[in-house]
Length: 127
Image (cartoon, rainbow, N blue to C red):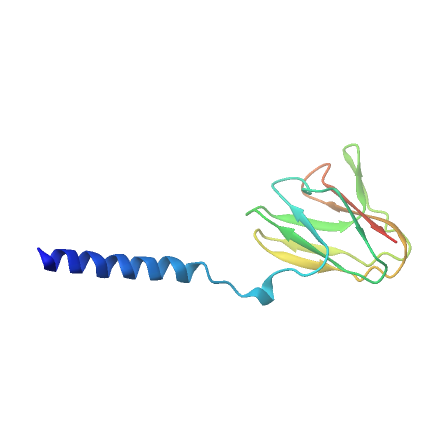
């Protein structure tokens, strides 16, 4: 009987250690500074305000592909106009990943959109 209890405690200890080890992550990969998060077919917050000279990290929180470029959706039609002073953006996300855009060195409003998901726009205001 004591053998069964001892084996049970050992297995419980191994299971606890395994689960705890899965929770460890590399903090150097955690985005720093301003972030814009994407879900299935929208930016979670469609506007972000940053200071001149900053970059933003765009985070794809789900396993959905996104292609982010300069421009915006106007109705059902993409407007690929790039504002003067905007950094060139042409990023592909494959899901559960992130990329950095910038720096934004000019004050103003800049539009980014997902070419795959109609109506998925992000406005970056730089002050």
